[in-house]
Length: 282
Figure 1 (cartoon, rainbow, N blue to C red):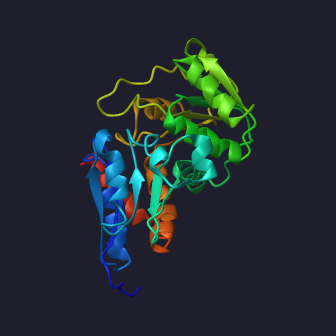
Figure 2 (figure 1 turned 30 degrees about the vertical axis):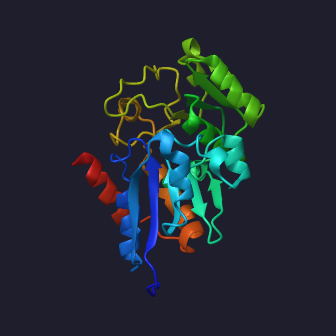
């Protein structure tokens, strides 16, 4: 691939941000595609968010990914927001167009669904009920992606029932809000379980979820990828369930961003996956 006549720049904005694996992922693609460019972690305090976004184009950035706590806060500062991002209520990717306009989109749903399909090619969202744990931004993206894939029933479990009800109101009748006290029973007859909370992440407590009523062929997924195998995934694996961590969700978002930023769709390879896994496991 030919070189370009300028330094290509992209990054990820968050607060804090230095824990992110995104720079490793995207800089790998710069190298593999023989492009002169860099993907930078940008630690932006909430009070400085608007100024930082407006500085992207003048500084030569093609765009940025957006992570906690800015996914919702960026929306008022953008010139356009995709329909998917509007429905999800969060932006995960910003394109700084040549004319200076900032365009927001959300690739989280695509990343999640693509991760499932690559790992389990015969998976179908309409195979049966799906239980989703949590009602934050990650949950909204997962639920949106599942509904787009044809899911008929999503049992949305959350500590604050009103947040689950809000997602149901925004995304449609296919979502059934369920109280936290009924989370164990919500696994009955489910064909898939997805944890979208931070429970199970390094530094967080484990998710308290009894898998006794879960079918042994149900897919158990976690959007957490540090550690690669949470206690939830370990418990599911030991009882014979297929499992899937969240690393692929991160990996498969990237090509969509690159297509918008640079007109290129880089490949998610086994080499890249192993590179990130090694960085996590040490």
